[in-house]
Image (cartoon, rainbow, N blue to C red; front, side, top):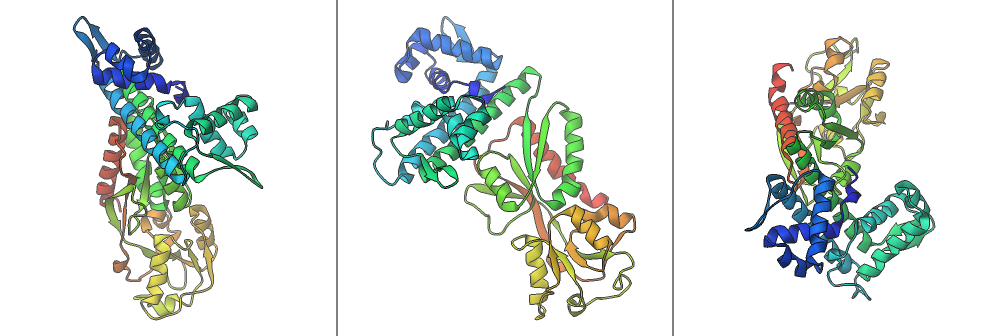
Length: 408
């Protein structure tokens, strides 16, 4: 379902009713009449397709899906509370004309407008992206600005960009919406039709071995779940994770942990190797030295990637200048083509080219890289609370990682 169909005020009425165990007690908290709250709860239940409360003469009580959804709603509201406070602080001045707790007054339309402008950098393009008229989106975006009392949009030569205050609120909005999506997924799974969509950021080793096996095992157990696998530069993947656009990252872990709002979980240690095409002049050589390696051209990952750091340290530790005739790329397809068509060398995990090695196209050179082990694992948001379906995938990833030695 469209996440923006959820009415934030109705969600607040739901959480207050759940907390108070009474519609009348919740009415004064959310400033709605009892009939309005009753109507809001009924509409929310119809939207979700599940009863959230059991209504008896003794009171109103949460059902099992109601308990699950309450957890997600409260986590979503907490993100918005923190985001609204950070928004005001980021403005670096006292808000003018805004509401002190404007997170209580936010609407789904305002969040959608804010995020659309952030992505499009232009009110017209943002309106087109969400399918509404430009004046309507512009009005909604400016309503949010008046509600907060701080400037949210700034003009640039390229169009419109979010101010630091708006960026803080946009981050909170994405995390809040991610929680609500999880809540919807949990209810649908409880109803028997799992609608989960998992978004996974991957780095080379994971997408060549560990992840494909886990995906096949997972989709046999959850055939209706949709998986979105995203690759790209680590910085982009980390940004997507921290902003709720990705659920997890899998690949080489960073040391130290790259941000204080993410956590890393090791899966296994993986040693690197020097590889070349079969028939390379060094293919039959024994105990190849670092000085010999320095004489050849190389294909390496870009700077900032852990494997590139190990490549640089290989020569630095030996007191030898690193090769300068290098081609930088993280593309597995390019790597295969360049190595097979030249005498270049590369440094990577043998698991990444296991098929090419088994087919006799590439070979591992006799170089001692036992010191080059790097840790492969999962990176998630620190406060992320996975659903049962998401936890199943995490378990399968751990199992595949643990079983990888069976078919090295």
